[in-house]
Image 1 (tube, rainbow, N blue to C red):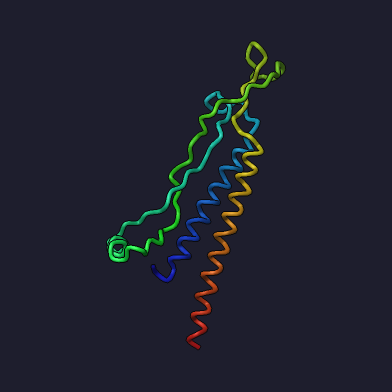
Image 2: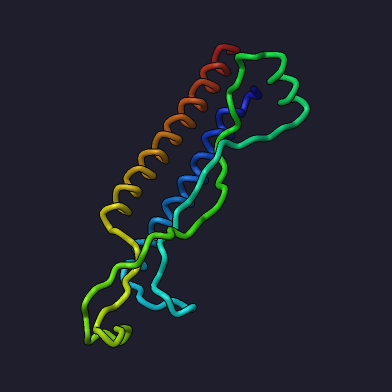
Length: 147
């Protein structure tokens, strides 16, 4: 692992969690959007992650020479996907988007779920900041040894 490997891993986590927070914020903002550009209610979006894999020759060689040295390369976003759960039906005959029976299709966004996800994303972001600061502190201590 290089000198800045832990910083790169933490920064990938920070970037991924920032995107996750952006998507959660978008879901909350559109929790009552009954009509989008394609005419349907807003569909909740979810960010998916996977372990980052950079398979350079050096990484491949190290992986096969050091069987126990599987440190990893951080995280990367694989995509932002729409939640395929059904829309909520709410009886509101005065709503402009109500059908003939008076029901309105509402987005499949649950505010409680989004708030729990927001807390989770915030904690993960904070953990990555702490890891980044610890790495920086260890590097500074190593530089102080040379004095």
